[in-house]
Image (cartoon, rainbow, N blue to C red):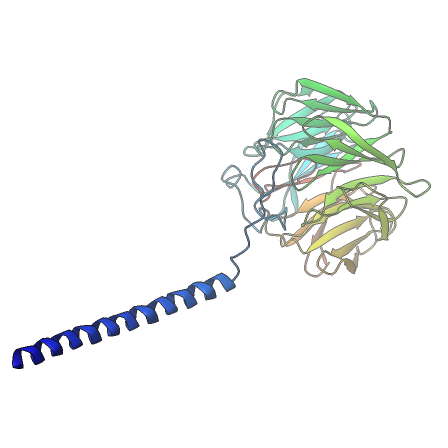
Length: 394
């Protein structure tokens, strides 16, 4: 009898233990299910948008800011040991004035070819090319030594750009009415794209580098060019009688292009993807050059006809300030210092160069140079590679 009672107790204990264990497993399972449900309710972090850029182009650092590589003093290892200089092409003197930005003094004057228009950093940033427009040559300058090399024959080089993958140089042959795609090192002609507009002169590339917008100064037109095909795929007349478009610059988010117009006295705002009719934003008489600040928040707009600089705020989508040069002037083309603190502009009709404080608009210096100073280059500047002109870096 006792034996049976013990056996029954053992069986009952085992049953209770089994039930307890089952209860514990049920609670754990319920907790796991609840955790899984909770995790499913929390959305996964959004994937970073990938930009399918032009084949061979360095990847886009930030889809929301094409100028992400251009932060203050963020110099590439390629240029970090180059001395800081301002190279000023004097169109009517056939020289390049070299300014030390620390002293505001000219330290050298380099003889070049006939009618130098712009000083252009190469895609790999190792060479500065002086565009001798009517001399039909390019003069290479070594920015490490400041010495000029042997001229290269290139017909009608008013301005010079480089495709974002570094595959081609693009010569803006203004009077020849051509876009000439060349080897970026030897400048050997690869392909010529004739255009029907007059005065191709300035450009900028889309966020993905697959197309670029070109201004045609003398016929008041814009072109859209397929980078890879090296072909004009769009053309339009600006909706202003006597329009004379100049510099071109893309917004940080890549959604808009701004085109300075010296006769419409403002910037055209264009959707590059749609390439539909742009809208005019008045800035000042003789709107000419466009330069983005190192934090990508503002753009400095030179108004050559009234001696002023307008400041456009990208975040507010409006003009916020206007700085007038003391005693007037003719601010034209230039660039921003590596630290972002100084805007350098040539005084096209006054044989001088202006250094302007980007925080206050104060004129820091007014430096006499040769006759007809035009597309000066501040060098070196931050960025991974150059798209040309006086320094468009990505």
